[in-house]
Image (cartoon, rainbow, N blue to C red; front, top):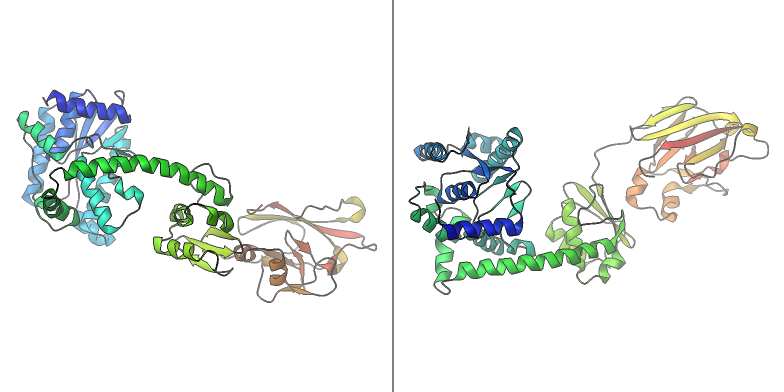
Length: 460
């Protein structure tokens, strides 16, 4: 049995943060080390339903097998259901061209998530403690981080729960010693070959020479920053709402299909760069890209495009437009006769021929009525091409389609998606959704018309 004081500390932390419930079932990630052994015993002693899961990554030879045997025996002695999996971690890392550490992490958490579904568990409990959080703060500070990187490790992240973040490693070891509970030690934790180990073995002992309570001080500071971050996030959510022109959002969860940002409103915010960062990080833009853009908001020329791996950002007059990068190309489609046609699986158009006396001329911009005698099938539906010209309704001379779209204040992204419909001669008869050609307008002598209607349009 673990000592009462330690158990109460963890119990109060769980209750305060609403981490676990007695009706749930929880997987404990069990390595056999002091932290995970303490976690399993603590949750079991508190009356939670737990099952242990151990991963053998086969990275430390006999030591890996020793850990597996220990975990099996530990669970048997404490009546804890035990789950085991073996991984060829080195082969996985080579196949996916990632580090051994990243491979082990991906394999471990993918297994935990699948096991959680298989046994209908509520969440996965891992044994990170205060020292881990302190080390994370220092790692992020050394690498360079924003505000949230200084809050340490979160006690909840999706299905991952960390009930021991209220205690230090020393408290864990003392508790196990008092209970005469054995555990295993991972020898790689004693080697200063990775950043976290260098911080644990070299940096922290050095700064403890200046402040013996440095871990406690950093932990308390991280807690204060975490509270400050809550205030910051609430203020940032309001800032994001103010600068987004479309679509309307209710939180910092931004739509994957992009947003439109007001430059004038953005520059009026207390911190334009931070607000821009909170929006654009969702779409894969790097801090350096965002910093450069924020510094030149007022001077960047209209039409400039910045790309991330998944999205493009367009500077368009007084706005920034973010849209997904599309690999789709619009294939022109022939319209041989009247009927309903689906273009590129997203646009549906209806073509009808009728007597003018039997029809009502629509003023809907997504509907066009033209004089049948002035055009000829087959029609073609396609996107705008360079050099396209047409005679806009109400005008006598022709105009470049690109100039017409510019006059309509259309963005470069929208210009790329603009559809035109041409007849058999190649003449543009309708700049879809905007203007028909004056050459095929309905007049006093018109007897029959062709009515073209958007039934479905993804950009409505």
